Length: 162
Image (cartoon, rainbow, N blue to C red; front, side):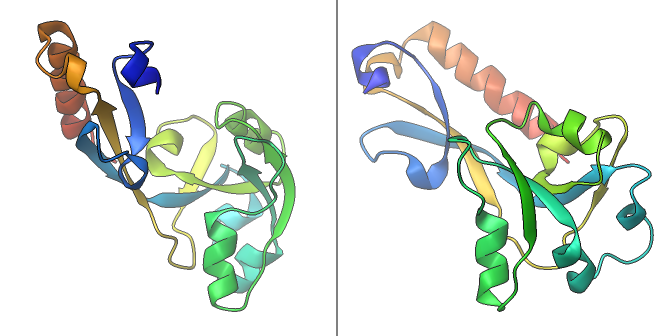
């Protein structure tokens, strides 16, 4: 509705959540990684499923109230659970929390890559990733300025891979 009203010209969305009446273009495929402070005990040696489940986890819930996410759904499918100790409403605060604690988190690789003081490890189970895309309304489809922005964003995402 914000796109229809002209409040915004472009939305960054997961492709499965894009309404069919909007124009859309995929930007990149994302995968999840396990993130922890560099000197965390789990940063060394094999990160087994048992070890992963025994660790205390932080997760991001935009509403800030859920203690379950896509990782918990993947674990439930194989009859396992993890220990979620903290739920935060934004990925922006997560690096500071991880650097200052023994908590670990499962996060999108592009958000975690290149952040100092953190180690990234492959999760010991398959966690379904997602495709991030952009969506826009017909009213801006041929407008040169939004079209230029979409092209720049698409090229920037195509040129950076994690």
